[in-house]
Length: 463
Image 1 (cartoon, one colour):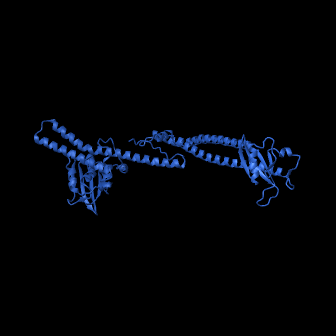
Image 2: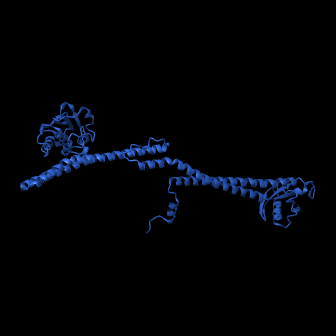
């Protein structure tokens, strides 16, 4: 069974404007049309009622004037002669009971108009009736002479009037009002489109700006322009969205850089082992040793990826577990690839337990150890201690140290004191260590008391 939209719905959707300006203009036109229809109907109804009242008042006034010429004091009733008889006798019927005393020459006694006048006279009261003959006619009756309750009047005057001019006036007013409605609706539609188009110009400008701007490199924003309140609120929301997009992109770039930085060491180990293995024929034991190193490096890469991705998902700080601090530090010290001229020592009690997973602790202390080995002249020391519920790990080297002017930039991603010092690195290790430590509720700080070398202190909750 076809569950699609009906043809009528499809036709309506096709006719419905696709632009906001067209829709608002159509809504304004529909509203104005509804208002104009109501006003036109009410206005023409009032006008027709007023014209009807005028059409009734005029024959009644003439009937009252003619009634003054009818003498009902004597029997039989007679009509007095006056100077204006010709004017008063036009379209006038005078009845004495059922006897017709006078009637217009243009209306024969057996005609439809005369019969209608006779019925009004027979009724004996003040009333009017309409007749649709060759032309619309309005007839009104006026009793003459004093009458007793329940008795018929001595005479009745019936006057007639052509309603053609009144109806023509009403039709003319209707046509004029319809023409006025059409003009007003056309002006309403045009003015609404112009006004809405002018009001939407800032939106068009904002759309063009959003197309041209880069969420990463551009510092331009929507909120600074002078716009109406509604568009200013929209601009503020868009600015917040752009800021969030920039933050997400920066976070992705940071994660990519950190992964590249952290994976560089195990990849170098794998490359070195393969080069060493291919340099000359090796025994079975040498091959097994190479396989073991490569497997260990691959496992280290997997751990690095898991740790950084967990932290990127904001779950690193909730990862449960504790770890033996000294075993992690000794494993770091035993990693291959350390410069042969630099000695690495690890000191501390074997009872230290940190309240973080082993992989996270390794990722925090690892970049500090790599930096120390990179810059040290003869020795690097790693010392662990416990104090008031905190585990402190100090990484100290006897290298050139950190220039005092650069200490405030140490933990900024991508910053190095001397990029041309001949040492590798992208300036991401220290920011990564601090960020991971803070995700676990700890901190990484630089200590200047170890000058002329460099010293960093990792503080983590005890397990």
